Image 1: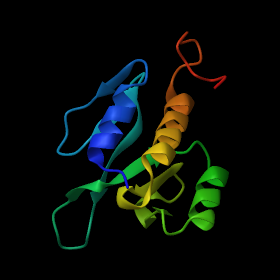
Image 2: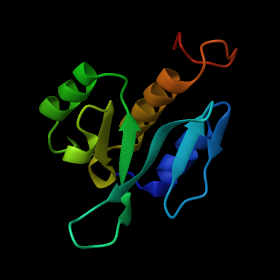
Image 3: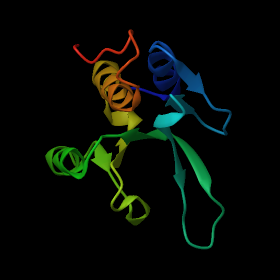
Length: 122
């Protein structure tokens, strides 16, 4: 079981990561978001920042669908994310080790290739 503190610890351990001020968490590399808290929008209600759910950059639709279909108890999406390479992960359902893998993969896809610290080969 992971939580927002795990997201913060894991994201900030990666090179050149910046945390953007928000009501939850929002991490970027090269000014590109790779993991942030889910801004839930329900009709007729104000937006609610959910720190128990992380939005992750996954790179492409194929990877998104593989995660959604392969582990529906862990990953989900909403209509607002249709066509975007993003999935939501339920933090209470993911281990810290798996979360580290997911966050690192998202960072790799967003970090510039020319960064010497980029963990592309990992």
